[in-house]
Length: 366
Image (tube, rainbow, N blue to C red; front, top):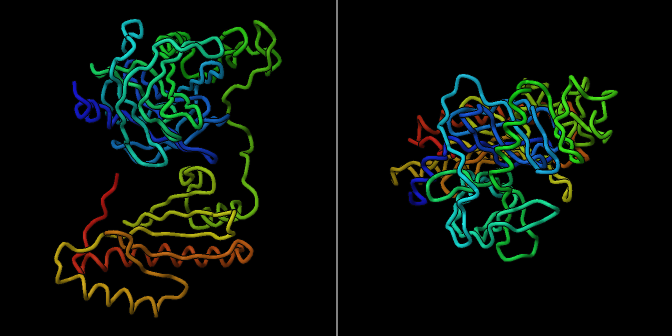
């Protein structure tokens, strides 16, 4: 297979994963009906947000974690047909073999980079890793490393900072072993002991915190009775989103970043703690294809900017964006709710109005 065919085959199997503190990649394995990712991507969360080309944002239960091998298994979305991807054989890989790494680096959806295996059995901390020269970056973590037969031969795990394309993937042999170990306990929160390799579950954990085999303290992926809440401005933002009827668990897209939909508009909220401001950007439709419509559209946008209260309409490349900005010291639950409600309502209104009156087109979504 060539790289294009591999990317087409994997697009619907690649899963975006987000928590309150990070984002990453996962991939669906139909044989086991599970999503595979890195343990550091789920980061002690028993529930994460997932999204893919075949389904909208949803919550997913973390069932298995493995700190030593940096693996985690997530519940797959229900009633969604996802493609089958095959697990390859690590033993057949050789130095110099071409590979493709797929993931979501820096939030860029479905990015694939091609390279070769620099060393098939690089040893680090007692484990074998596949060293590759394909560029992998933050966000690629948990994505598949694929051979030219379209088979998963590794899980992209980490890079060496400052290195020139020094990436490392956990070989598929460790993934197979973990899947086979977990499947008899499917649907039960489980964690593999990083000291002795024993599978610890709700049923066998000693005193609710220790490995029954070696006594190492273990944390199972269990949903806490009370969810850990953010602090400061981030907490206020989430309170505002709840007030406006949004599910903050689905809205989270990493540290101090949230994304929601209002009608046909997508709204991204970011809190820049370094510069002390909160920005709400509603991505509306795109510029019209008819050039004759563009001048009157610009005139309308400029006129509206004189009329709107604390909102600004602008063009970013082909996208029309409605924005509001406020400083964190000025943010209260009351004024923030009013500002974001205004943004959400106007975003939905303008999106429909611009399509009807100025022939703007639907925004392309990845």
